Image (cartoon, rainbow, N blue to C red; front, side, top):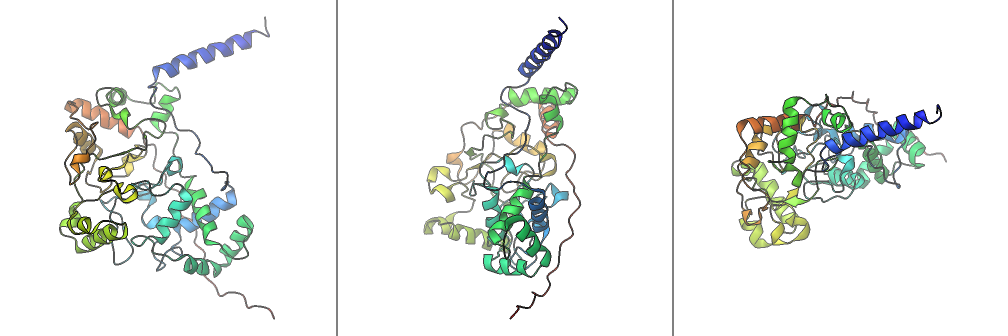
Length: 373
């Protein structure tokens, strides 16, 4: 009997655990470890190199725009402004998304333009309104830094730093910027005390009357689909000449028709990738994780607070230039003020403590060693 007792105890624990899981919303999950691609495995040395490169302006056109310029740790690893910063002399034209938990996305950017963190890093470093860097120029700069030459040789076996490997290292570092221990995660793993009574009421609204789980589901609380919600256009395009020029550049560069270029006053979103008129104004459903720190919200930052977001959905969304494509899922919810307060409280449970690691020391350029005869 003594040998059977542990088995019985184990079955009891499993049974209790199964019962507990059945009490949690089936549409939602705690967040597990991030997926690691087979062609870019993680090592401490690669991560350390990627961390330096993330904060080093060496990977930009004019040596002033590191990744961290638009993804500030103390601003939610994003920018707490409607539109992200741009390359000097420009501005960006969309809201900066946090990199926290970006390792879990199947597609990156608001319209899913990149399929991996490696590709996203390259696009950001080279983008005309972001890094504006040229691969050969950035690669040459890296070669002037002895510490980088040594690191690229150790991590990748490079004789000289290879810019594609720089993007691999940055992606590896970004896969360490994750948060899996929020109050919500702890609750989903079995801690009944992890959420407050108000947050539990908000969870009921989220999965019930609010029907938020129709789009915000799974461990990342997003189905990664694309919708037009009727978000109003960025108001900076009304009176900011630099924003206007940047917007027109993007319309032209991304292949708009001449009629669209001359008449469109809003962001066509997914249309730029598909060229289907039914996709105008659609953007990817973002994760709701870490959103306590990533205000303002939506692709153009036009909603300032989480309460504003909840009220926007409660009103049935808004209106924009492409509202004929507005999702039928966006309908007035009829939530009371108390229910909206509860829902905001639940959304706050999706963020833990701020992730504020110390910034690494950035190495300096030095003359290349003289060639031997």
